[in-house]
Image (cartoon, rainbow, N blue to C red; front, side, top):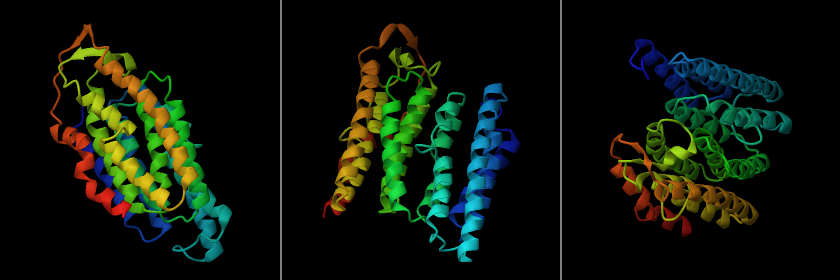
Amino acid sequence: MNNKFFPSNFLFISIMLLGTIMTLSSPHWLTMWIGLELNLMGFLPLMNIKGKSLEAEASMKYFIIQSISSSVLIMSSLMLYNYNMSWYSMFNHKFLSTMLLMSLILKLGGAPLHFWLPNMTKQMTWLILFLILTWQKIAPLFMLTLISNMNILILISLLSTLLGSIMILNQTNMQLIITYSSISHLGWMLSMIMLNTSLTIIYFMNYIIISIPLMNLLNSYNNNHLYTLTHKNKINKMMLPTLILSLAGLPPLLGFMSKLLILISLMQMNFILMTLLLFIGSLISLFFYLNMTLMTIIKSYFLFENNMLLKSYNLIYLMNIFSIFIFYFLINILIK
């Protein structure tokens, strides 16, 4: 980013952070909505940081979608307040609470309201894509923990996992691959958000730990197409495949540890069919990720050479490899 040290960017980042913190610390829905709007107002200028026309188009799409979801959110909140005369526990009305839940799902980009996210991410830089797939999901995920509508959340969770895994097949754009992967991972997080919030937080933190080095590595390539993974470079050859397989959830890597905790917890609660469908969605995406790994390891053509050297991620690399041993105590607690 050419102008990343421009003083106004610090202001926009501060507003974005303040909006999310305000939502997380708010006592009721009106101030949560204000926090979401602050976050949006701080994030939109960051999307236009290079001043390109594609960034302006993406930011306009993002603004329209977020404005629609915020409008539905505040209107359903006001109607629920009118129904219950309270901002705190107001989920007695099934239809209005479902509308409020769907507005948050639209903000998150979960299926079946995910149509806007892949359409927009192709035009973004990797840093903005990372923020949309991680930081921008924190506040809506927190708000979902306050809505008690288990049946709808289970349906959205299964749709997100299966659609994200199926749509990733035959994709060639790396940003679209990461986006559909995020939709699939969102389904796993939503599956536990009403049952065990701590597991959702663990899954989300592990997703961030995997995404930071992976997106930084992908950002080093000349373009965002899948064939660029076959270029010969001086990056540790096992780093990128390990991160890709960890994102897929292959044992014994860090991504597998997150999914194992959720699968064990769901089976203990007798959600057998849900566990099976989540597992099938993970296997579908694993097939595609294994193909990406083969391209990285086996098909590294000497014709294309990239001499770029990147920062070392030895700590994250070791955490991915030895995650089962590092986090064994968590698995042991859940099994017992």
